Image 1 (cartoon, rainbow, N blue to C red):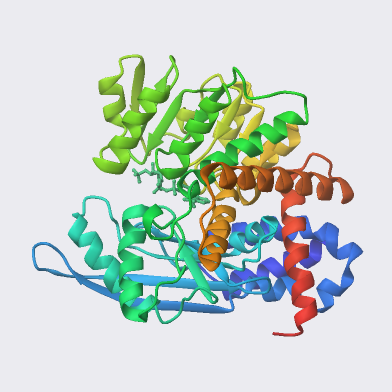
Image 2: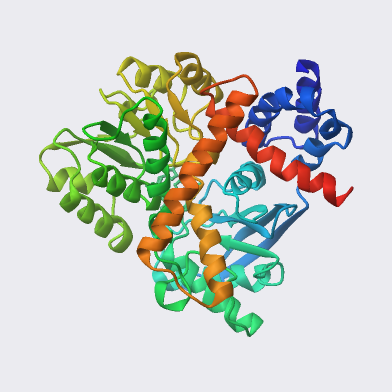
Length: 453
Ligand code: NDP
């Protein structure tokens, strides 16, 4: 089986050159699946994994727009429609200068398995642009979003492909995108999720990824008869996922002590309480400032700049019990993983997608800590997007408590399913194999039923 994975990876690299994140994501899944292929050879003969690796459709388009100085700007737009075996394509849009084809293919690939784990009928997709919303005026962001949607609208629809937010795409951007879709399609449908509450959005959707990742951590701790009460928690990022991760840690009695952005991080030994979190939410969501201002306001905190010459991220080098990486891919390198273990961290719940490099994942698995990989731990966001789709279809809205309850139940079920499958395939406690195999089998069985398409 090792030779199958090796030859598959050779082919993936040859066919998809210069896409390191995509190679990394495929390799991790393929390694886990070696356990399945021995029991279910029909998956191999039907070339299920080879088909899942190949996107059903990739759309790349020009996004021209005019900035406030009247200058023409050109960005590149993407939508990867990866797999629709169990439902319409579903996955976020990322606006960040680092966006390219390979990055979005990795995210779309992960999304296929994650969406399957939620138990809701959603296929996998991802999209975005190399546009950087940072430093742009609201009018510039609006003109960009409108131009982006002028092309994207012909490829999406409530039963075809339903995008959502991701890095750089929050409530403001979803509003501009939805407004333009509605104008072009001349219909009011649930074509995007993460919408505003008074025009079709779901309560708890903004909170869902962060809350879900903390619910997942609580479930993992539950297997050892423990809770988050009194636990010191390291959180990275300060965007959507990080903010609501901090909020839910506080709800559960934990003590968050760090937050970051792409320029640096803050460590607050006194803990980030609700007032401080409100300050961060205003700083990041309204004033769109830098996390450094936190340490200027709260003297209990220290701020450390990013230094590209460092071989590790000092955020992960503090004494703690739990870590919630919630910024971006590969933000925990091998040295960071070693530092986390050295500092006593024994719970890692990934709010971000693939935030730990493969060598780091191996260290966590070898140390037998409670490690929840992103495709399971952060599935609460897309699950609640699925709940938003259901509410839109029913033209009905559930209460905050109802949605939160459903989200909590989904996260418990994802945890239970990953744990059970890991056990069934001989890797008890390994949520990586559990998530990869459980997600894969649901999609694979649907593909077998539907023939060679
Ligand atoms: P936001 O744009 O709201 O926040 C992202 C945060 O991460 C910001 O603090 C940002 O800092 C920081 N960040 C982004 N890129 C980098 C980088 N290259 N280096 C250092 N810091 C960086 O995004 P989200 O909170 O929505 O997303 C965070 C992660 O969670 C991503 O991996 C995303 O894919 C994942 N995720 C999000 C879901 C959602 O529902 N939103 C669902 C599932 C997963 P700065 O502002 O300086 O760029």
